[in-house]
Length: 116
Image (cartoon, rainbow, N blue to C red; front, side):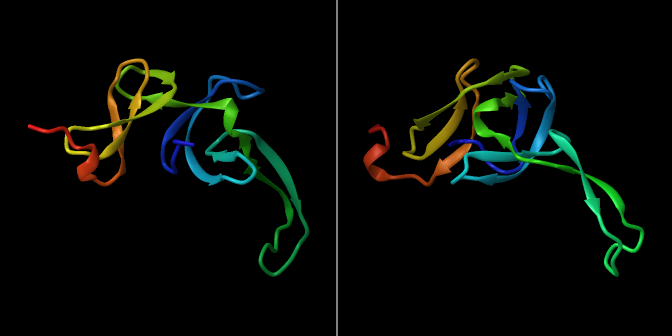
């Protein structure tokens, strides 16, 4: 899984299709991601000291990871991600459509550095 927290993703399937939002959290075991403003439900809350008003609260629920795609800022499209080694030996994420870099994944390793 190459999607990280604070990435901008676009929903590609389901009721909220074509909606973009920021990733708030990721559950790796369940394969779900919580996206800001997507898959909103009503949570009914009883009156308490913490919530004296009670009533209905709107909150986001997790979406299956396969139903979101990273939104590339460079090509302005939802895209798949790839991983590649850079000349200094560090590993980075990149857009499969426009080949733009999307940040490092791993620090440089001498074994993967290209010889000059």
